[in-house]
Length: 524
Image 1 (cartoon, rainbow, N blue to C red):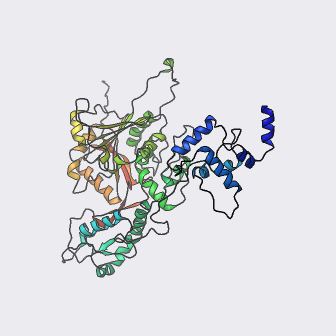
Image 2: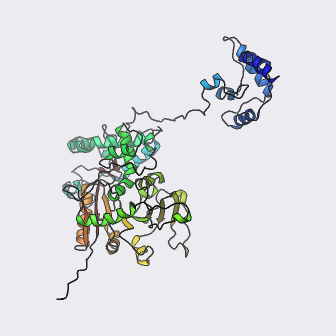
């Protein structure tokens, strides 16, 4: 009997089958699919017809002439067709996608319409930023008296001979769209000086609008774990992204956006990695003392295979994770955690414990407030994230480092397992140097390497001069100052001074407390 019914159905067209079996017995799989379709918010129908009525409606729709209005069939049948009689997908179901609706974008700005003046921007956040600039930034025209002490030799405030009262910026340059001068007259008179940064300011303008344009950012989908057999080329950004198998980035603007975030973990990784582009050969910027310190950390981060296993007989002793203390943490502490996981991917067998320390280390992390209470087990109220990655743990402490150092909270320090990093610390800046006067001597006592970055060349040289003045003769230079290979390619604007443009981690250098090697004199 079963063979006869199978033969009959095999010689009958689908339309006849649908009309004949208007109310077929549902299998378990069909019931499951119909239940999913009815429970999905996108597939909910406004009618409460029975399955038989829906089947008859489909049959009528199939036989209806093309010039008639279509029957009111629930939208779920356009999204997902039912199974055929024998549990196989019909040809119609194969032709139509069975997945969910494609992802839609709510674009505020198109890629060819990113330039807008800050004041008339369609983005409310940028309009508020323009109002902030007008309220706090001053006109840089030489006719005005200086409004602050110069912080570097090339600062325009150092050679401002004007006698007119300072005035806030109000006029927006039509070429860059950012308020830069108090009036159109001063903008025209100082136009030659403004041309030096006008193109960069326009680029900043477009990048800011691009971030808020509502487009999908494929460049923020990062690569996964790195195979140990696959070498990473750290010559520049392009070779790194290619050898790490990132999605191809063919647009300069997308490249600027992705490097703005990745510059933080890669600045650290490019120095600590065994394939680092910095070396002791001529032009490599690494000093002999730097090779000694970094070799110790590389030995820990690139351990040899131990031959261990998952069973008890395969247990092997393992080194503790390398602690990277990021002092004066601000924006870097609020980066998405998958950005910092890229550092762990560079060292497949290494382990990391990132410790963000500083009074501003919880900036832009309002969702994590209130802070944990200070208890005997957690005396400084640290926020611990121990499930970021199997080989990475992140802790955040809202306090000054010298306070923690004096209590011995992180003691002991080991050059094989500890490293300090300071992103744009402003060691020599007049407004922040006093905050580091007590911290830097304590860092030199640990004898661990200290990596420092700067916004610009002048900012970096000012920090080095301050360290030379404060700790003369008590430190060794590990890496000569210079441009960071993995600096951010995107420029940033200082809202308090639109003339001050910089990029994240432009330069990098390293130093360490001087080590006095003991020498033995043989008795004659």
